Structures are given as structure tokens and as C-alpha cells.
Length: 147
Image 1 (cartoon, helix red, strand yellow):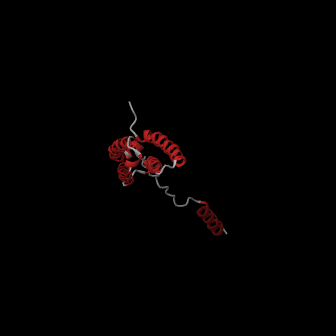
Image 2 (image 1 turned 180 degrees about the vertical axis):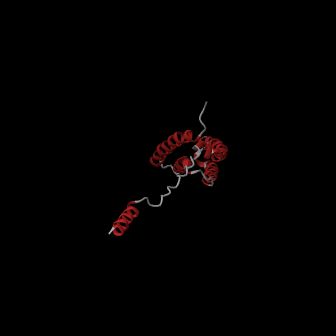
Image 3 (image 1 turned 135 degrees about the horizontal axis):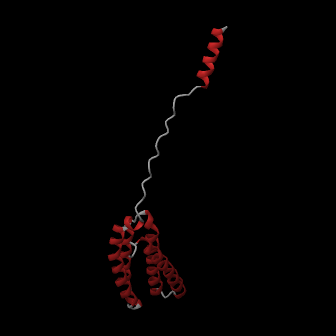
């Protein structure tokens, strides 16, 4: 009887006893992504000279008569393709999208002007202005902070 009681206590102790310790893995820290202005540094450095070329070509187109606009418009289309060829980081994609939308509307506005489609031209002008404002608001977000 003592033997059975001892065996029962032993079984109970083993059943209630400590199990093998569980090892909880130490969580690895998640790397913090670089700020967008760091990620976009190369993109911005490539975009700036293209934007300067755009501004110059746009000024020329703006001062060109209706019948002579095909050359300046072709230049604007080439510059737009230069922007399209850039690969922005994900955090700057909106900048790229708004710039391309602005450029497309501006080019289409000149084409409407050449075709004497005044209502279309006005609508495109408003849309281009909206995209330019959106671009400017997003562009400043990808620039380094000013001291």
C-alpha cells in the first residue's frame, strides 16, 4: 500500500511538476527607414536640372505665337519623358505623379491653344495649376529640413 501511495504521489508530482522551460525568442529590432529626404536625395538631384529645363522651355512656349508652338511643345514633351524616366523612391512617388500630371496638362493646354479650343484650354490650365500646387506641397516634404 505504501508503495502504491508513493507511486501515486510520484505520478502526481511529475504531472504537476515543472515542464521543460519554454524559450521565448528575443525580438529583433525593426530597422527604422531613412527619412524621405535621405531616400529621395538622388531623385531630387536628377529632377532639379530637368525642372530648370522645363521652366525655360515653358517660358519659351508661353511667348511663342500660336502658329509656331509645335517646336516648343515638342521640347516640353521630351522634357516630360526625362521626368518619366526617373525612378523615385516610394516616399516621393506622389511628387513624380503630380509633376507628370502637371506637365501633361500644360502640354495639352498648348495643343488646345494651337487648335483654338478655348474651353478645353481653360480647363487644362486650371487642372495644370492644381497639379502644380499639389506637386509643390509634396516636393517640399522630400527636401532636407532647413536649419
